[in-house]
Length: 125
Image (cartoon, rainbow, N blue to C red):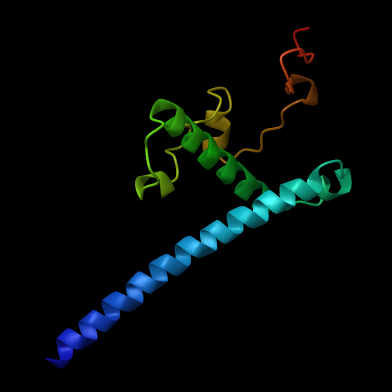
């Protein structure tokens, strides 16, 4: 009888640990978002970000792109455990960048290729 109580206790501990892990991930996503907001117009802050911070930025961006694609494909889709899973390597990433990101290579995007609107200049003109 004591074994069943112990097993139930262990199961509850595992459940709480899983919830804690999920909350910690959400907190880190909020921290990354705040960090990015602090970077707006602050080149020193941008240059001070560590490789780990940039990896978190990339992970968050990929997660948000995947979530956006799912919402566009199926607007009635509710949040689920599946939505919390990271995308497969290369999914939701520009195909030209996917191989470099999969290899862990740093990818620099020239500023002139970033488009801020329909009428923004691009590298091609």
